[in-house]
Image 1 (tube, rainbow, N blue to C red):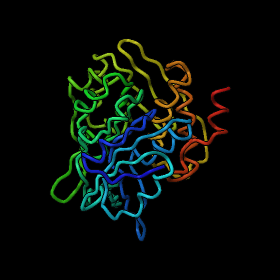
Image 2: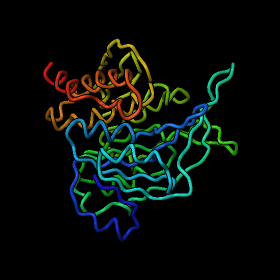
Image 3: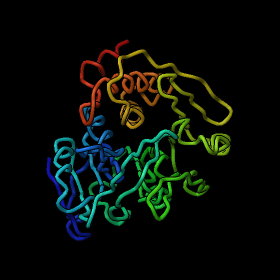
Image 4: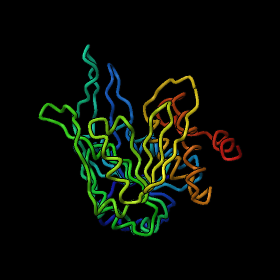
Length: 291
């Protein structure tokens, strides 16, 4: 697939059509002596590709970011070059884990959409650090099924980079978004958010790791289970779940009662692997669809 380092004019020349658009910063995750590719787009794009979709990715990172190469096989990539990439570091102590933002990349405006992508039937907004506006994006993809993975809209950080909770609630954006996904951990400091979002009639899925999760739509609610696996790396499981859900919907006639449990099982398989290899395999997808 092609990679594009674009200006507005060059992006406008991309006329190829895609099945799913995914927007958000890739991340550089720092670990002792190493750095790893992360971020919603980095787990979602391989998942959509595994499900047979043609993918378009809008992201931003340092102009010389070496990790970007890991995304190139999975879709058309519009990369907005920045002075730095969004970089996270987890610091552990006796009191627990603290997460720090060490640097950020460019804001992702809807103005960067190429014309060929505007007819995509599926759109996935996957912010990691408040780097896009769900309302602006939703207004551009009015005919698409739009999903927002909310975690990155609920983060702020102080002058030292320490990540803290931010309450996000945009009624105008919520009216445009079809599917919202977040985890129990994401809203630990504000659990009433679920009841607030349910007023808008969105498809809302709140994940809870190995315990499965819950589906809500208005007054309707039901639970889904996970499966037991030997976990190797839990990173990205929520993103694999979300991308599996959205990517599965056209394959199951938009039946959420079927798609949500399958997405949960594909996410469970993902924790047995790491990085972009967390994406579902063809055999896993075929097995779950035929089950």
